[in-house]
Image (cartoon, rainbow, N blue to C red; front, side):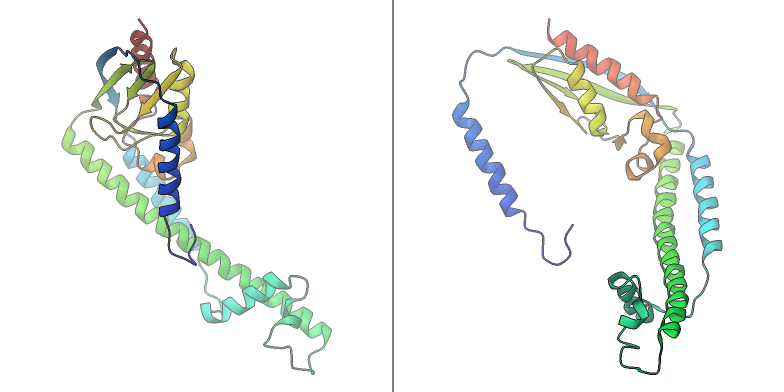
Length: 248
């Protein structure tokens, strides 16, 4: 993410087009059989939404309690922060605020350094806390939306269709969730086919499908996940079975 210039996707599109043309020239058509399989599973919903909201609200309260006022505002903070970043050993002496004041000696500069270093770190801590508070607010709103979805559904599981398609030597398996890469790579390793393509958010959209091991780590994808951790084993078992059946 660069903020100094507009995003330009045209070079990426050109590279993609050239790659497709190079691959096209190497294709040798031949007879290809077509095979299709489909299976339905019930994936468990997350039922810990209320507990997750409560934990975030506790974290929110702790962060609010940690906020303290300083004598700095952002206009005063920024030049001090830059001086400390550019001259960490002796920032006050290099600061434009004191550079031309010959009355200030080294000891005075050192005392000012110690004071401003504390103020800068305190202000940085408040900035980080505010960033965390903004993320927590968004996460709580998302979880409340999930709680409403669960309330309306009145079900502890979600129906999901998994499809398998064999076109010549290429196997395709689908998922109604937006799989994280670890799940897709596991399917490819377990597939008996030379070429396996995992197609996500197909035949419905169940938000993110995060690996069970990721749930304790938090993060955007886990927050956006409607499914309980047990979904992974259920989905993978059925998807791998479909891939193996396509081989027969």
